[in-house]
Length: 104
Image (cartoon, rainbow, N blue to C red; front, side, top):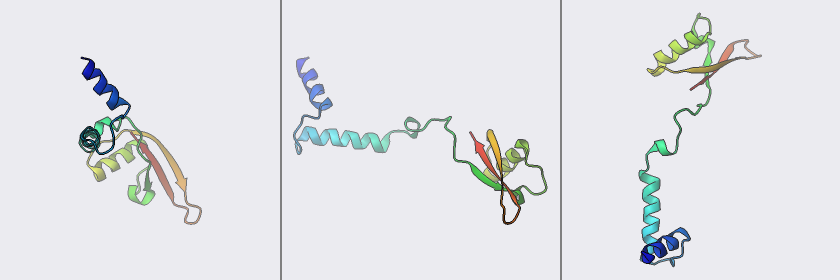
């Protein structure tokens, strides 16, 4: 039992000499964790994505309400999204309106 605690203590405080087999095993374990751990460990499902820029030309003549934009995203992406908010942005040069769409 004492050997187990001593080994865990050495691993926790990284006490093995560089080039020893114990050091190499710890490095391999760290690399295996980094490359083989599932993405769900590092990403949360409810994180807010970057806003998408949708132009009024893409929407056509439809009004830019959340339902219209949701239908447009469903058609283009093939999956249903939940829209958190829509921010209209007007281009001063051309006068066209674009929309920043924040989706969940």
